[in-house]
Length: 491
Ligand code: NAD
Image 1: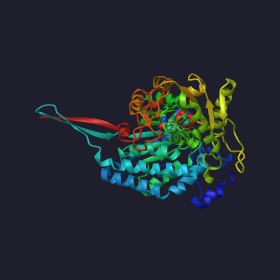
Image 2: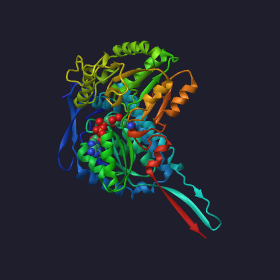
Image 3: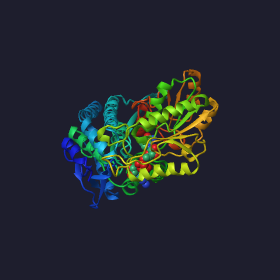
Image 4: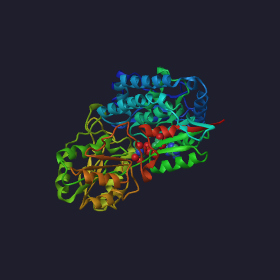
């Protein structure tokens, strides 16, 4: 049992223990459960049902029924008001949600709070679009009138990872509901709690039962069943490349469309005219936030040769200054989400050492006072990493920065584009021509000039190459959740 559980429950009340289908709490049909841990101590904080294909079937059937109920009759403006109220209710309970998210996922409380406010913002943003989902008219000549309607697809499936648990749910379901769909959510097995709270809250605020169902369980069972379910018209998946491919294959069995938000190995280029006082905190936050468990983290730092040593020294000093601790104590960095993730990250760094890569700082799993048993890994800087090295090619998904020096913008662009990924990219320079050349030529769904992670929740987000298919966030996400129907009247 985590020693910090009582402290959180004193504020939030008992943490959720059941999943949420048809507007009510339910157990898995198979009666099985899975434990969820406090990653900062390794202690159990509770358990939730380990649902599987039977539970997914029931949840999808409920979501299908809900398409015909009061949800379908709700006027667009009313649906928008409901989404707005959900957003406001999340904002009012932000502290409560943040405590649960920190205990379940590990991130520092202040970071958790930001992601909860973003969760609220997704609902409020899409609330405003509901009564503006207009179609168009198409000129076909004198005796014809043609117009289009944007209709909901039907039941949408949402399979979510553990790194930003509740915000990732909202990012998918807010636009899906705005377009009139219903949803079935499968949160990650490591971090189910805040998503259950969200499902409960939405019904409490007035969402008709069945419109958003949530099934907890393992990916290979519940997740796979959701992706393959013949009554699911669109699957929004966020997670690893390998699982994304499996989801796409499963969805193809019944020609469901997919949005795939996958991994990254994003380059952050620093030219020699950049203001290093601004670059250093930006690059540190770009890679170490959420203990490096951010898909768009700037994990490859490409620095122009003339400034590479000075910048590296300053990054090392910054990494060494970071505090590690329990997320509830608001350190600079919390633990990794699980022992499995700790083993993955440790494996990447150990293999890098064996290949002779210089680890300038970090590289170890420290034991933190009061958090013995936690899954911590030090902020790590690896120097002179060859562009072809595993550490420069593969997503670590932990607090590991690979630094490389480059001789020119052209070389930097070639290295930046030299991985299988294409999620995000950043550049710091005073030279707008060089910045724009980089932005145009880099293969990435988002580009940040002079401020890594500078975009917000209203900006289209998604990947080139193996970083995914389709876009979430912003107006672009609406295309995922609407069927266009063209009606032509003759005469
Ligand atoms: P994962 O692929 O292991 O799991 C993601 C989700 O898929 C979980 O809910 C899991 O239970 C489920 N799942 C597992 N196997 C499944 C299967 N066979 N069929 C259906 N669902 C299945 O990923 P993860 O380890 O939870 O998350 C880390 C990965 O997510 C990283 O690669 C990261 O870059 C990526 N990610 C991407 C974005 C983005 O927006 N592009 C955002 C966050 C995380």
